Image (cartoon, rainbow, N blue to C red):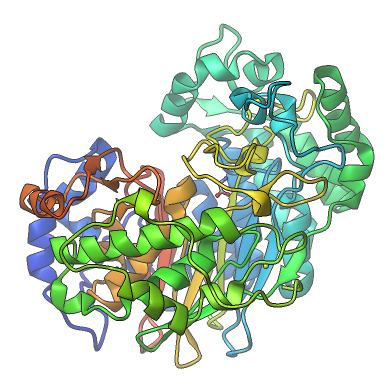
Length: 588
Ligand code: GLY
Protein backbone atom coordinates (compact mmCIF):
# COMPACT_ATOMS: atom_id res chain seq x y z
CA UNK A 1 0.00 0.00 0.00
CA UNK A 2 1.23 3.48 -0.74
CA UNK A 3 -0.45 6.34 1.05
CA UNK A 4 2.26 8.92 0.78
CA UNK A 5 0.85 12.35 -0.06
CA UNK A 6 3.51 12.75 -2.73
CA UNK A 7 4.99 10.24 -5.11
CA UNK A 8 7.70 8.24 -3.43
CA UNK A 9 7.97 4.83 -5.05
CA UNK A 10 11.21 3.91 -6.80
CA UNK A 11 9.29 3.15 -10.00
CA UNK A 12 10.48 5.37 -12.83
CA UNK A 13 9.10 3.75 -15.96
CA UNK A 14 5.97 2.05 -17.01
CA UNK A 15 6.40 -1.58 -17.98
CA UNK A 16 7.05 -1.76 -21.66
CA UNK A 17 7.68 1.95 -22.06
CA UNK A 18 11.08 3.42 -22.76
CA UNK A 19 12.67 6.82 -23.09
CA UNK A 20 15.53 9.02 -22.09
CA UNK A 21 13.89 9.62 -18.76
CA UNK A 22 17.01 10.13 -16.70
CA UNK A 23 18.34 12.69 -19.14
CA UNK A 24 15.01 14.48 -19.00
CA UNK A 25 14.91 14.42 -15.22
CA UNK A 26 18.42 15.84 -15.11
CA UNK A 27 17.48 18.51 -17.63
CA UNK A 28 14.45 19.46 -15.60
CA UNK A 29 16.42 19.46 -12.38
CA UNK A 30 18.75 22.00 -13.91
CA UNK A 31 15.89 24.18 -15.12
CA UNK A 32 16.00 26.81 -12.43
CA UNK A 33 14.83 29.31 -11.34
CA UNK A 34 11.18 28.35 -11.11
CA UNK A 35 8.14 29.40 -9.12
CA UNK A 36 8.43 28.34 -5.49
CA UNK A 37 5.95 25.42 -5.41
CA UNK A 38 7.10 24.06 -8.72
CA UNK A 39 10.75 24.64 -7.97
CA UNK A 40 10.49 22.55 -4.86
CA UNK A 41 9.25 19.64 -6.92
CA UNK A 42 11.90 20.04 -9.55
CA UNK A 43 14.66 20.08 -7.01
CA UNK A 44 13.33 17.06 -5.17
CA UNK A 45 14.03 14.38 -7.72
CA UNK A 46 11.94 11.71 -6.05
CA UNK A 47 8.77 13.61 -6.88
CA UNK A 48 9.21 12.64 -10.48
CA UNK A 49 8.25 9.11 -9.55
CA UNK A 50 4.55 8.38 -9.63
CA UNK A 51 2.73 6.81 -6.71
CA UNK A 52 1.95 3.23 -7.66
CA UNK A 53 -0.76 0.87 -6.45
CA UNK A 54 -2.62 -2.20 -7.62
CA UNK A 55 -6.30 -1.72 -6.70
CA UNK A 56 -7.36 1.87 -6.73
CA UNK A 57 -5.94 5.36 -7.11
CA UNK A 58 -7.16 8.88 -6.35
CA UNK A 59 -5.47 12.14 -7.32
CA UNK A 60 -6.94 15.42 -6.07
CA UNK A 61 -5.73 18.87 -5.17
CA UNK A 62 -6.26 18.37 -1.43
CA UNK A 63 -4.87 15.56 0.70
CA UNK A 64 -7.98 15.34 2.90
CA UNK A 65 -10.19 14.86 -0.15
CA UNK A 66 -7.83 12.25 -1.54
CA UNK A 67 -7.93 10.39 1.79
CA UNK A 68 -11.71 10.23 2.10
CA UNK A 69 -12.10 9.13 -1.52
CA UNK A 70 -9.45 6.45 -1.15
CA UNK A 71 -11.28 5.12 1.91
CA UNK A 72 -14.40 4.77 -0.21
CA UNK A 73 -12.44 2.64 -2.71
CA UNK A 74 -10.86 0.55 0.04
CA UNK A 75 -14.29 -0.16 1.49
CA UNK A 76 -15.60 -1.47 -1.84
CA UNK A 77 -17.03 1.67 -3.44
CA UNK A 78 -16.41 2.36 -7.11
CA UNK A 79 -14.72 5.26 -8.90
CA UNK A 80 -17.92 7.34 -9.12
CA UNK A 81 -18.59 6.88 -5.39
CA UNK A 82 -15.05 8.02 -4.62
CA UNK A 83 -15.18 10.93 -7.07
CA UNK A 84 -18.41 12.34 -5.64
CA UNK A 85 -17.10 11.90 -2.08
CA UNK A 86 -13.93 13.79 -3.07
CA UNK A 87 -15.99 16.51 -4.74
CA UNK A 88 -18.05 17.20 -1.65
CA UNK A 89 -14.95 17.06 0.59
CA UNK A 90 -13.19 19.62 -1.61
CA UNK A 91 -16.21 21.91 -1.22
CA UNK A 92 -15.23 22.03 2.47
CA UNK A 93 -11.44 21.87 2.46
CA UNK A 94 -10.70 23.99 -0.61
CA UNK A 95 -13.27 26.81 -0.75
CA UNK A 96 -11.35 28.70 -3.40
CA UNK A 97 -12.43 26.18 -6.05
CA UNK A 98 -14.09 23.14 -4.50
CA UNK A 99 -17.76 23.96 -4.37
CA UNK A 100 -21.45 23.39 -4.14
CA UNK A 101 -22.07 26.92 -5.47
CA UNK A 102 -20.60 26.29 -8.92
CA UNK A 103 -20.57 23.65 -11.61
CA UNK A 104 -18.46 21.44 -13.81
CA UNK A 105 -18.12 18.32 -15.87
CA UNK A 106 -17.55 14.67 -15.05
CA UNK A 107 -16.32 12.03 -17.49
CA UNK A 108 -16.96 8.40 -16.62
CA UNK A 109 -15.34 5.55 -18.52
CA UNK A 110 -16.16 2.08 -17.30
CA UNK A 111 -13.67 -0.74 -17.10
CA UNK A 112 -15.89 -2.90 -19.32
CA UNK A 113 -15.01 -0.89 -22.44
CA UNK A 114 -18.51 0.59 -22.87
CA UNK A 115 -18.80 4.07 -24.36
CA UNK A 116 -17.61 6.81 -21.98
CA UNK A 117 -20.24 9.25 -20.72
CA UNK A 118 -20.07 12.88 -19.70
CA UNK A 119 -22.19 14.56 -17.06
CA UNK A 120 -22.58 18.27 -17.71
CA UNK A 121 -23.44 20.12 -14.53
CA UNK A 122 -22.27 23.51 -15.76
CA UNK A 123 -24.04 26.53 -14.27
CA UNK A 124 -26.82 28.15 -16.31
CA UNK A 125 -27.69 31.79 -16.84
CA UNK A 126 -30.71 32.75 -14.70
CA UNK A 127 -33.99 33.17 -16.59
CA UNK A 128 -33.78 36.96 -16.15
CA UNK A 129 -30.38 37.20 -17.87
CA UNK A 130 -30.08 39.35 -21.00
CA UNK A 131 -27.54 39.71 -23.79
CA UNK A 132 -26.51 43.20 -22.72
CA UNK A 133 -26.68 42.81 -18.94
CA UNK A 134 -22.94 43.50 -18.56
CA UNK A 135 -22.99 46.64 -20.71
CA UNK A 136 -23.77 50.22 -19.73
CA UNK A 137 -26.20 52.43 -21.65
CA UNK A 138 -23.47 53.35 -24.14
CA UNK A 139 -22.83 49.67 -24.82
CA UNK A 140 -19.53 49.55 -22.94
CA UNK A 141 -18.79 46.46 -20.87
CA UNK A 142 -18.91 47.15 -17.13
CA UNK A 143 -16.31 44.56 -16.30
CA UNK A 144 -16.81 43.94 -12.60
CA UNK A 145 -20.52 43.36 -13.03
CA UNK A 146 -19.89 39.88 -14.45
CA UNK A 147 -17.19 39.12 -11.86
CA UNK A 148 -17.84 40.58 -8.43
CA UNK A 149 -21.56 41.27 -8.09
CA UNK A 150 -24.60 39.07 -7.53
CA UNK A 151 -25.20 39.30 -11.29
CA UNK A 152 -22.01 37.26 -11.77
CA UNK A 153 -23.52 34.05 -10.44
CA UNK A 154 -24.95 31.35 -12.66
CA UNK A 155 -27.45 28.83 -11.29
CA UNK A 156 -25.23 26.26 -9.50
CA UNK A 157 -25.05 22.73 -10.89
CA UNK A 158 -22.67 20.79 -8.65
CA UNK A 159 -25.16 19.18 -6.27
CA UNK A 160 -27.47 18.03 -9.07
CA UNK A 161 -24.51 16.80 -11.12
CA UNK A 162 -23.04 14.73 -8.30
CA UNK A 163 -26.46 13.28 -7.48
CA UNK A 164 -26.97 12.28 -11.11
CA UNK A 165 -23.51 10.67 -11.28
CA UNK A 166 -24.30 8.58 -8.19
CA UNK A 167 -27.73 7.63 -9.54
CA UNK A 168 -26.30 6.43 -12.84
CA UNK A 169 -22.99 4.92 -11.83
CA UNK A 170 -22.54 4.87 -8.07
CA UNK A 171 -23.37 2.45 -5.30
CA UNK A 172 -23.37 4.96 -2.44
CA UNK A 173 -26.33 7.13 -1.44
CA UNK A 174 -25.96 10.89 -1.51
CA UNK A 175 -26.05 10.75 2.28
CA UNK A 176 -23.09 8.34 2.40
CA UNK A 177 -21.08 10.39 -0.09
CA UNK A 178 -21.69 13.54 1.96
CA UNK A 179 -20.77 12.04 5.33
CA UNK A 180 -17.01 12.84 5.27
CA UNK A 181 -17.67 16.37 3.98
CA UNK A 182 -20.20 17.09 6.72
CA UNK A 183 -17.75 15.82 9.33
CA UNK A 184 -14.93 17.97 7.90
CA UNK A 185 -17.22 21.02 7.93
CA UNK A 186 -18.65 20.43 11.40
CA UNK A 187 -15.55 19.16 13.25
CA UNK A 188 -13.23 21.31 11.19
CA UNK A 189 -9.83 20.51 9.74
CA UNK A 190 -6.30 21.75 10.23
CA UNK A 191 -5.63 24.38 7.60
CA UNK A 192 -2.52 24.15 5.43
CA UNK A 193 -0.34 27.14 4.57
CA UNK A 194 -1.92 27.43 1.12
CA UNK A 195 -5.35 27.94 2.69
CA UNK A 196 -4.08 30.85 4.80
CA UNK A 197 -2.17 32.42 1.92
CA UNK A 198 -5.18 32.26 -0.38
CA UNK A 199 -7.46 34.03 2.07
CA UNK A 200 -4.79 36.64 2.87
CA UNK A 201 -4.28 37.38 -0.82
CA UNK A 202 -8.01 37.71 -1.51
CA UNK A 203 -8.76 39.58 1.72
CA UNK A 204 -9.81 42.91 0.20
CA UNK A 205 -12.13 41.36 -2.35
CA UNK A 206 -13.69 38.84 0.05
CA UNK A 207 -14.15 41.02 3.13
CA UNK A 208 -16.46 43.36 1.25
CA UNK A 209 -19.14 40.77 1.95
CA UNK A 210 -20.05 40.37 5.67
CA UNK A 211 -21.11 36.71 5.26
CA UNK A 212 -17.78 35.88 3.59
CA UNK A 213 -15.87 37.68 6.33
CA UNK A 214 -17.78 35.79 9.01
CA UNK A 215 -17.48 32.40 7.28
CA UNK A 216 -13.82 32.40 6.29
CA UNK A 217 -12.00 34.76 8.68
CA UNK A 218 -11.49 35.03 12.42
CA UNK A 219 -13.48 37.58 14.41
CA UNK A 220 -10.67 40.14 14.14
CA UNK A 221 -10.64 39.79 10.34
CA UNK A 222 -7.39 37.85 10.14
CA UNK A 223 -7.11 34.59 8.22
CA UNK A 224 -6.96 31.29 10.06
CA UNK A 225 -3.32 30.38 10.39
CA UNK A 226 -1.70 27.21 9.13
CA UNK A 227 -2.02 24.55 11.81
CA UNK A 228 -5.26 25.96 13.25
CA UNK A 229 -8.60 24.14 13.10
CA UNK A 230 -11.19 25.77 10.85
CA UNK A 231 -14.88 24.91 11.20
CA UNK A 232 -17.84 25.71 8.92
CA UNK A 233 -21.06 25.04 10.88
CA UNK A 234 -23.39 26.74 8.37
CA UNK A 235 -21.90 24.75 5.49
CA UNK A 236 -22.26 21.57 7.59
CA UNK A 237 -25.98 22.33 8.00
CA UNK A 238 -26.35 23.06 4.27
CA UNK A 239 -24.69 19.75 3.37
CA UNK A 240 -26.82 17.95 5.95
CA UNK A 241 -29.98 19.26 4.27
CA UNK A 242 -28.78 17.67 1.01
CA UNK A 243 -28.02 14.42 2.85
CA UNK A 244 -31.51 14.45 4.38
CA UNK A 245 -33.58 15.56 1.40
CA UNK A 246 -31.49 14.83 -1.70
CA UNK A 247 -31.16 17.50 -4.44
CA UNK A 248 -34.34 19.14 -3.14
CA UNK A 249 -32.37 19.87 0.03
CA UNK A 250 -30.38 22.36 -2.09
CA UNK A 251 -32.61 23.48 -4.96
CA UNK A 252 -35.73 23.84 -2.82
CA UNK A 253 -36.50 24.55 0.84
CA UNK A 254 -34.24 26.43 3.23
CA UNK A 255 -31.06 26.54 1.11
CA UNK A 256 -32.96 27.75 -1.97
CA UNK A 257 -34.66 30.36 0.20
CA UNK A 258 -31.27 31.58 1.50
CA UNK A 259 -29.89 31.82 -2.07
CA UNK A 260 -32.93 33.74 -3.33
CA UNK A 261 -32.89 36.11 -0.33
CA UNK A 262 -29.18 36.74 -0.99
CA UNK A 263 -30.06 37.61 -4.61
CA UNK A 264 -32.96 39.84 -3.65
CA UNK A 265 -30.90 41.82 -1.12
CA UNK A 266 -28.27 42.68 -3.76
CA UNK A 267 -29.97 42.84 -7.17
CA UNK A 268 -29.09 39.29 -8.25
CA UNK A 269 -31.23 37.30 -10.68
CA UNK A 270 -31.44 33.69 -9.45
CA UNK A 271 -35.03 32.79 -8.56
CA UNK A 272 -36.73 29.83 -6.88
CA UNK A 273 -37.85 28.68 -10.31
CA UNK A 274 -34.29 28.85 -11.73
CA UNK A 275 -33.11 26.64 -8.88
CA UNK A 276 -36.00 24.17 -9.01
CA UNK A 277 -35.63 23.79 -12.79
CA UNK A 278 -31.87 23.24 -12.87
CA UNK A 279 -31.04 19.92 -14.55
CA UNK A 280 -27.64 18.38 -15.29
CA UNK A 281 -27.31 16.78 -18.73
CA UNK A 282 -25.78 13.48 -19.84
CA UNK A 283 -23.68 14.17 -22.94
CA UNK A 284 -21.52 12.26 -25.37
CA UNK A 285 -17.85 13.18 -24.89
CA UNK A 286 -15.79 14.47 -27.80
CA UNK A 287 -13.79 11.60 -29.28
CA UNK A 288 -10.55 11.78 -31.25
CA UNK A 289 -7.61 9.56 -32.00
CA UNK A 290 -3.98 10.58 -31.59
CA UNK A 291 -1.25 8.22 -32.74
CA UNK A 292 -3.39 5.18 -31.95
CA UNK A 293 -4.76 6.40 -28.60
CA UNK A 294 -8.46 7.17 -28.20
CA UNK A 295 -8.97 10.57 -26.63
CA UNK A 296 -12.27 11.27 -24.83
CA UNK A 297 -12.81 14.73 -23.43
CA UNK A 298 -15.52 17.24 -22.64
CA UNK A 299 -17.96 18.31 -25.30
CA UNK A 300 -19.75 21.70 -25.42
CA UNK A 301 -20.66 23.72 -23.44
CA UNK A 302 -16.99 23.16 -22.76
CA UNK A 303 -14.59 23.96 -25.55
CA UNK A 304 -11.96 21.75 -23.90
CA UNK A 305 -12.38 18.42 -25.65
CA UNK A 306 -13.02 19.97 -29.05
CA UNK A 307 -9.79 21.94 -29.07
CA UNK A 308 -7.62 19.27 -27.44
CA UNK A 309 -8.64 16.94 -30.26
CA UNK A 310 -8.25 19.68 -32.88
CA UNK A 311 -4.73 20.61 -31.71
CA UNK A 312 -3.67 16.95 -31.48
CA UNK A 313 -5.01 16.35 -35.00
CA UNK A 314 -2.90 19.22 -36.31
CA UNK A 315 0.20 18.09 -34.41
CA UNK A 316 -0.15 14.48 -35.53
CA UNK A 317 1.32 15.53 -38.86
CA UNK A 318 4.59 16.67 -37.25
CA UNK A 319 7.27 14.32 -35.86
CA UNK A 320 6.90 15.65 -32.32
CA UNK A 321 8.79 12.81 -30.59
CA UNK A 322 11.73 13.28 -32.93
CA UNK A 323 11.71 17.05 -32.52
CA UNK A 324 11.94 16.58 -28.76
CA UNK A 325 10.15 17.76 -25.65
CA UNK A 326 10.01 21.56 -25.33
CA UNK A 327 12.49 22.05 -28.18
CA UNK A 328 12.05 25.25 -30.20
CA UNK A 329 10.61 23.25 -33.12
CA UNK A 330 8.07 21.45 -30.94
CA UNK A 331 6.98 24.60 -29.12
CA UNK A 332 6.72 26.45 -32.44
CA UNK A 333 4.36 23.83 -33.90
CA UNK A 334 2.38 23.61 -30.69
CA UNK A 335 1.95 27.39 -30.52
CA UNK A 336 0.90 27.63 -34.17
CA UNK A 337 -1.67 24.86 -33.70
CA UNK A 338 -2.96 26.41 -30.47
CA UNK A 339 -3.46 29.81 -32.17
CA UNK A 340 -5.59 28.26 -34.89
CA UNK A 341 -7.72 26.35 -32.38
CA UNK A 342 -8.31 29.33 -30.07
CA UNK A 343 -9.25 31.50 -33.08
CA UNK A 344 -11.90 28.90 -33.96
CA UNK A 345 -13.00 28.78 -30.32
CA UNK A 346 -13.76 32.50 -30.38
CA UNK A 347 -16.11 32.06 -33.32
CA UNK A 348 -17.81 28.70 -33.11
CA UNK A 349 -18.04 27.45 -29.55
CA UNK A 350 -21.05 27.86 -27.31
CA UNK A 351 -23.80 25.87 -25.59
CA UNK A 352 -25.06 23.34 -28.13
CA UNK A 353 -28.52 23.52 -26.55
CA UNK A 354 -28.68 27.07 -27.99
CA UNK A 355 -26.30 27.27 -30.94
CA UNK A 356 -25.02 24.93 -33.61
CA UNK A 357 -21.37 24.08 -33.17
CA UNK A 358 -19.59 22.42 -36.11
CA UNK A 359 -18.14 19.82 -33.79
CA UNK A 360 -17.47 17.08 -36.34
CA UNK A 361 -15.74 19.55 -38.61
CA UNK A 362 -13.58 21.11 -35.93
CA UNK A 363 -12.40 17.70 -34.74
CA UNK A 364 -11.97 16.10 -38.16
CA UNK A 365 -8.62 14.97 -39.58
CA UNK A 366 -9.18 16.66 -43.01
CA UNK A 367 -9.85 20.04 -41.37
CA UNK A 368 -6.69 19.60 -39.25
CA UNK A 369 -4.75 18.79 -42.40
CA UNK A 370 -5.99 21.95 -44.04
CA UNK A 371 -5.01 24.04 -41.01
CA UNK A 372 -1.62 22.29 -40.80
CA UNK A 373 -0.80 23.44 -44.32
CA UNK A 374 -1.03 27.05 -43.14
CA UNK A 375 1.75 26.51 -40.56
CA UNK A 376 5.25 27.52 -41.64
CA UNK A 377 8.23 25.65 -40.22
CA UNK A 378 10.35 28.68 -39.52
CA UNK A 379 8.00 31.60 -39.06
CA UNK A 380 5.31 32.47 -36.54
CA UNK A 381 2.06 33.67 -38.10
CA UNK A 382 1.00 36.92 -36.44
CA UNK A 383 -2.32 36.54 -34.65
CA UNK A 384 -3.90 39.36 -36.66
CA UNK A 385 -3.31 37.35 -39.84
CA UNK A 386 -5.27 34.48 -38.37
CA UNK A 387 -9.03 34.43 -38.30
CA UNK A 388 -11.36 31.59 -37.48
CA UNK A 389 -11.22 28.84 -40.17
CA UNK A 390 -14.05 27.24 -42.13
CA UNK A 391 -14.63 23.84 -40.53
CA UNK A 392 -16.88 21.66 -42.68
CA UNK A 393 -20.62 21.55 -42.08
CA UNK A 394 -22.69 22.29 -39.04
CA UNK A 395 -24.26 19.08 -37.83
CA UNK A 396 -27.63 18.76 -36.15
CA UNK A 397 -28.06 20.81 -32.96
CA UNK A 398 -28.48 17.77 -30.78
CA UNK A 399 -25.22 17.22 -29.44
CA UNK A 400 -22.04 18.65 -25.44
CA UNK A 401 -10.45 18.07 -11.75
CA UNK A 402 -9.85 15.07 -9.79
CA UNK A 403 -9.07 11.62 -11.18
CA UNK A 404 -10.09 8.23 -9.80
CA UNK A 405 -9.56 4.66 -10.99
CA UNK A 406 -11.01 1.71 -9.09
CA UNK A 407 -10.20 -2.00 -8.95
CA UNK A 408 -12.66 -2.77 -11.74
CA UNK A 409 -10.83 -0.43 -14.10
CA UNK A 410 -13.58 2.21 -13.97
CA UNK A 411 -12.24 5.73 -14.39
CA UNK A 412 -13.68 9.12 -13.45
CA UNK A 413 -12.22 12.45 -14.50
CA UNK A 414 -13.93 15.47 -12.97
CA UNK A 415 -13.31 19.19 -13.30
CA UNK A 416 -15.57 21.67 -11.53
CA UNK A 417 -15.24 25.31 -10.51
CA UNK A 418 -16.67 28.56 -9.22
CA UNK A 419 -14.51 30.34 -11.87
CA UNK A 420 -12.15 32.73 -10.04
CA UNK A 421 -10.43 31.78 -6.83
CA UNK A 422 -13.35 32.04 -4.33
CA UNK A 423 -15.68 32.71 -7.28
CA UNK A 424 -17.60 35.95 -6.92
CA UNK A 425 -16.37 36.23 -3.31
CA UNK A 426 -20.01 36.30 -2.23
CA UNK A 427 -21.08 33.81 0.46
CA UNK A 428 -24.76 32.95 0.69
CA UNK A 429 -25.67 34.37 4.09
CA UNK A 430 -26.72 31.61 6.45
CA UNK A 431 -25.70 28.83 4.06
CA UNK A 432 -21.90 29.10 4.33
CA UNK A 433 -20.87 28.57 0.71
CA UNK A 434 -19.45 30.81 -2.00
CA UNK A 435 -21.28 31.63 -5.21
CA UNK A 436 -19.61 31.26 -8.58
CA UNK A 437 -18.88 34.12 -10.97
CA UNK A 438 -19.18 31.92 -14.00
CA UNK A 439 -21.28 34.46 -15.94
CA UNK A 440 -17.94 36.08 -16.87
CA UNK A 441 -17.32 33.07 -19.12
CA UNK A 442 -20.04 34.37 -21.43
CA UNK A 443 -19.07 36.91 -24.02
CA UNK A 444 -20.23 40.19 -22.39
CA UNK A 445 -19.97 41.81 -25.84
CA UNK A 446 -18.55 40.40 -29.08
CA UNK A 447 -14.79 40.82 -29.24
CA UNK A 448 -14.39 42.06 -25.64
CA UNK A 449 -12.14 39.60 -23.76
CA UNK A 450 -13.20 37.92 -20.54
CA UNK A 451 -10.98 37.52 -17.47
CA UNK A 452 -8.82 34.96 -19.27
CA UNK A 453 -8.33 37.20 -22.31
CA UNK A 454 -10.67 34.98 -24.32
CA UNK A 455 -12.90 36.66 -26.83
CA UNK A 456 -16.18 35.31 -28.08
CA UNK A 457 -19.12 36.29 -30.18
CA UNK A 458 -22.67 35.38 -31.03
CA UNK A 459 -22.27 31.68 -30.15
CA UNK A 460 -21.38 32.52 -26.55
CA UNK A 461 -23.60 35.56 -25.92
CA UNK A 462 -25.68 35.65 -22.72
CA UNK A 463 -29.13 34.08 -23.07
CA UNK A 464 -31.56 33.03 -20.34
CA UNK A 465 -31.05 29.42 -19.27
CA UNK A 466 -27.92 29.02 -21.41
CA UNK A 467 -24.69 27.47 -20.21
CA UNK A 468 -21.61 29.68 -20.53
CA UNK A 469 -18.71 28.36 -22.59
CA UNK A 470 -16.02 26.61 -20.58
CA UNK A 471 -12.47 25.38 -21.13
CA UNK A 472 -12.72 22.58 -18.59
CA UNK A 473 -11.31 19.42 -20.09
CA UNK A 474 -11.74 16.30 -17.99
CA UNK A 475 -10.07 13.74 -20.25
CA UNK A 476 -9.74 9.97 -20.41
CA UNK A 477 -7.44 8.24 -22.91
CA UNK A 478 -8.06 4.65 -23.89
CA UNK A 479 -5.71 2.26 -25.58
CA UNK A 480 -7.29 -0.81 -27.16
CA UNK A 481 -10.57 -0.16 -25.28
CA UNK A 482 -8.78 -0.08 -21.91
CA UNK A 483 -8.63 3.04 -19.75
CA UNK A 484 -5.03 4.22 -19.95
CA UNK A 485 -4.81 7.81 -18.79
CA UNK A 486 -7.16 9.92 -16.64
CA UNK A 487 -6.37 13.59 -16.40
CA UNK A 488 -7.59 17.19 -16.21
CA UNK A 489 -6.69 20.56 -14.76
CA UNK A 490 -7.88 23.95 -13.53
CA UNK A 491 -6.44 27.11 -15.11
CA UNK A 492 -9.09 29.00 -17.11
CA UNK A 493 -8.07 29.32 -20.75
CA UNK A 494 -4.88 27.34 -19.99
CA UNK A 495 -6.81 24.19 -19.05
CA UNK A 496 -6.90 23.04 -22.66
CA UNK A 497 -3.17 23.42 -23.28
CA UNK A 498 -2.20 22.07 -19.86
CA UNK A 499 -4.20 18.90 -20.42
CA UNK A 500 -2.92 18.67 -23.99
CA UNK A 501 0.70 18.73 -22.82
CA UNK A 502 0.26 15.91 -20.34
CA UNK A 503 -1.19 13.81 -23.17
CA UNK A 504 1.73 14.73 -25.45
CA UNK A 505 4.30 14.18 -22.71
CA UNK A 506 3.05 10.62 -22.26
CA UNK A 507 2.21 9.71 -25.88
CA UNK A 508 4.95 11.57 -27.77
CA UNK A 509 7.69 11.92 -25.18
CA UNK A 510 7.26 8.64 -23.33
CA UNK A 511 7.29 10.19 -19.86
CA UNK A 512 5.95 8.52 -16.77
CA UNK A 513 2.89 10.29 -15.41
CA UNK A 514 4.61 12.26 -12.65
CA UNK A 515 7.28 13.57 -15.01
CA UNK A 516 4.56 14.41 -17.54
CA UNK A 517 2.70 16.41 -14.90
CA UNK A 518 5.78 18.21 -13.59
CA UNK A 519 7.33 19.20 -16.94
CA UNK A 520 7.35 22.96 -17.70
CA UNK A 521 4.39 24.03 -19.83
CA UNK A 522 3.72 26.54 -22.56
CA UNK A 523 0.49 28.16 -23.75
CA UNK A 524 -0.77 30.20 -26.70
CA UNK A 525 -4.40 31.30 -27.05
CA UNK A 526 -4.25 33.30 -30.29
CA UNK A 527 -4.93 36.55 -28.45
CA UNK A 528 -2.86 37.92 -26.84
CA UNK A 529 -0.29 37.00 -29.51
CA UNK A 530 2.37 35.53 -27.23
CA UNK A 531 3.70 32.19 -26.11
CA UNK A 532 3.29 32.08 -22.37
CA UNK A 533 5.78 29.76 -20.66
CA UNK A 534 6.46 28.58 -17.18
CA UNK A 535 10.02 28.90 -15.98
CA UNK A 536 12.11 26.00 -17.11
CA UNK A 537 12.22 26.64 -20.86
CA UNK A 538 15.86 27.30 -21.77
CA UNK A 539 17.04 30.71 -22.93
CA UNK A 540 18.39 29.13 -26.12
CA UNK A 541 14.95 27.80 -26.91
CA UNK A 542 13.34 31.17 -26.21
CA UNK A 543 15.87 32.88 -28.51
CA UNK A 544 15.16 30.40 -31.30
CA UNK A 545 11.43 31.01 -30.92
CA UNK A 546 11.94 34.78 -30.96
CA UNK A 547 14.00 34.48 -34.14
CA UNK A 548 10.92 32.95 -35.79
CA UNK A 549 8.83 35.93 -34.75
CA UNK A 550 7.26 34.63 -31.55
CA UNK A 551 6.85 36.84 -28.53
CA UNK A 552 7.70 34.73 -25.47
CA UNK A 553 6.69 35.75 -21.95
CA UNK A 554 7.31 33.83 -18.74
CA UNK A 555 4.62 33.92 -16.09
CA UNK A 556 3.64 31.96 -13.03
CA UNK A 557 2.88 28.24 -13.06
CA UNK A 558 -0.08 27.09 -15.15
CA UNK A 559 -2.68 24.54 -14.08
CA UNK A 560 -2.69 21.88 -11.39
CA UNK A 561 -3.20 18.66 -13.21
CA UNK A 562 -4.16 15.51 -11.30
CA UNK A 563 -3.53 12.38 -13.32
CA UNK A 564 -3.60 8.60 -13.18
CA UNK A 565 -2.05 6.22 -15.68
CA UNK A 566 -2.81 2.53 -15.94
CA UNK A 567 0.13 0.31 -16.89
CA UNK A 568 -0.22 -2.64 -19.25
CA UNK A 569 -0.20 -5.03 -16.27
CA UNK A 570 -2.92 -3.03 -14.52
CA UNK A 571 -0.63 -1.21 -12.10
CA UNK A 572 -1.97 2.26 -11.33
CA UNK A 573 0.37 5.25 -11.37
CA UNK A 574 -0.71 8.52 -9.78
CA UNK A 575 0.76 11.91 -10.64
CA UNK A 576 -0.39 14.85 -8.50
CA UNK A 577 0.69 18.32 -9.54
CA UNK A 578 3.31 19.90 -7.26
CA UNK A 579 2.30 23.33 -8.55
CA UNK A 580 -0.47 23.10 -5.94
CA UNK A 581 1.17 22.28 -2.63
CA UNK A 582 -1.85 20.43 -1.22
CA UNK A 583 -2.10 18.05 -4.23
CA UNK A 584 -1.84 14.36 -3.55
CA UNK A 585 -2.16 11.02 -5.26
CA UNK A 586 -2.77 7.96 -3.13
CA UNK A 587 -3.48 4.36 -3.95
CA UNK A 588 -3.95 1.03 -2.30
N1 GLY B 1 -14.44 29.17 -15.54
C1 GLY B 1 -13.42 28.67 -16.38
C2 GLY B 1 -13.93 27.70 -17.39
O1 GLY B 1 -14.96 27.09 -17.19
O2 GLY B 1 -13.32 27.56 -18.41
